[in-house]
Length: 325
Image (tube, rainbow, N blue to C red; front, side, top):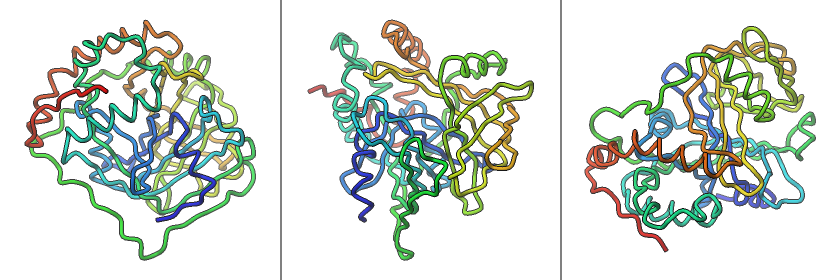
């Protein structure tokens, strides 16, 4: 599979991507993740084995999307906004190989995130480094020169006879569910997100069955949610159940801050209202504050460490070893 060469630096060098998957009731849920490129040209993200919900959504419904919208820290002089719609294949058949790969991937792409952390602590973080990979084979790609999203996009489409890889078999038993309680007061979270985290991404589903996403040009808080000014170049109508997702990371990635809100979008395509149903649980890890990020890791470990053996056993595999270079 060959996608446009001009997009390869975006796929390889952007530090975060908005990844969207679909719930059982066809609601799009979007969270920022770190993107990688697979050896076969797939566009890959990962999630922890101890919090596998994103992967289980993608295994159940492989229609996913990725929005590359933030060039910060990439060093790219001519950044692009790129929307990829594709078919996901979930990989958790070999947890040790996934763990080895993630240690390599993360230390290569965001080395500052763990810089200064004692080696013995890193080796104890199997609950974090043990990964499920989600590999996306693109079906449709749309891209804009960054800052010119009001124009019509460039387009690429996979051949009609493209054969998409299947996911590894689902594990036995029940998934563990959310590990962190969602905030009860969405208004406080929404106020903080608008004030601190920049412009959000609006995600909804389309008639084609794929999620669609675009970053807003402006956002304003209302009594019921958000009022969003959206680019004119989005060729899909954005309406119905979805997510508004905020994210922030510094130029040198040492941590991130996120906030995501589930609700319903309506409007004429450029002026959109988003009625918030609730704020979703998320994992923000410090942003510019490394000490706060390390504290968040410690708190997370208390909830997630006990899940590691159980989730490995559900897949009939031993707990992976942490092999540092």
